[in-house]
Image 1 (spheres, helix red, strand yellow):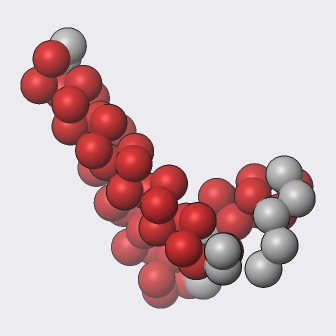
Image 2 (image 1 turned 90 degrees about the horizontal axis):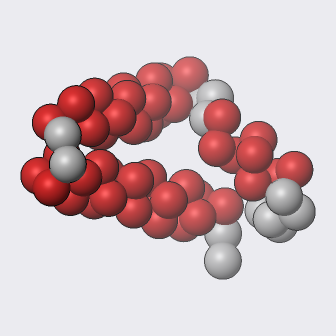
Image 3 (image 1 turned 180 degrees about the vertical axis):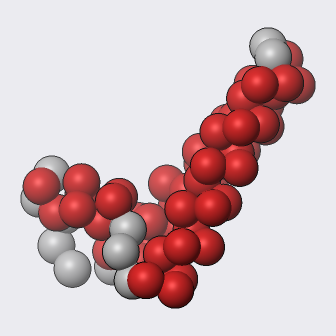
Length: 62
């Protein structure tokens, strides 16, 4: 799988899990959802994504 697909899968999973946690546990989990969204937005403009660096260190091939 390509690196971009891993990033999309992880980001989508984080958003869905944080929405579920906001509904079940505490609405403060929506801040995590906003953080993921802002990180995706800044990576679209800058090309820098911290998750890509983490995945590279874990050995995911591009």
